[in-house]
Image 1 (cartoon, rainbow, N blue to C red):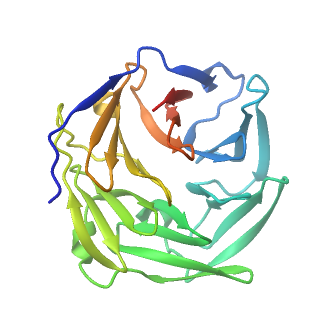
Image 2: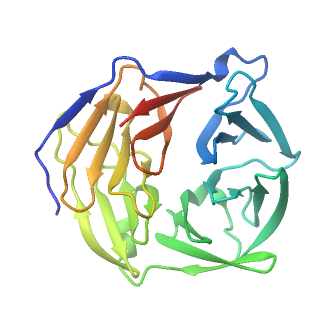
Length: 270
């Protein structure tokens, strides 16, 4: 078990507010935040729309209509497109050129309620299936993504898992705060974040290939925890605005974070 008792604390007294969706004349309740180039994209379960914020023109967000019958449970960003899980059978791939295609998932997921999180590595999708206690790997082939179980063994360890992130290794956060690290289908490490206040309710996690740190949301304690994957150094970013942490996007270089907090988006330096 990887333990750490060093508490590097950063208090953010005033996070920069990028958007407040509660001020809109229409309802949009974002579930996740994604970024391509200089634009943020939000998706929601209530509609088949995307909400786009050009960071060079944040006063004029754009609603992008994709579907009248599908909603978006989860999303990942590729270099030039978004991949959005819409149903047990298919995903939408939305290009930054404002067009999209739908792709079938084979085999289908039976029920997206079982899918707790989705991440990508290269062009492959990884889905955390809490019902069947496995990580599913889907590879694009033609007009479909073809999937299979990724874990070699130890599926029971995924009980009560809530989120995952991929950088070549796969990290899975559990409800009790423990984080499991996998490589080549097998668990190689348990990360137990020993910090104060105690981290005891697992939240969304984020990392990408080339990043030094794993980022963990802790809405209960109004903080983002940064865990260095090599030397286990922990930094905590506290902010009173973080009362409903939902999702996070970290820029390349790991100096800037965009934080989805309820109906608001904040930008912070890290």
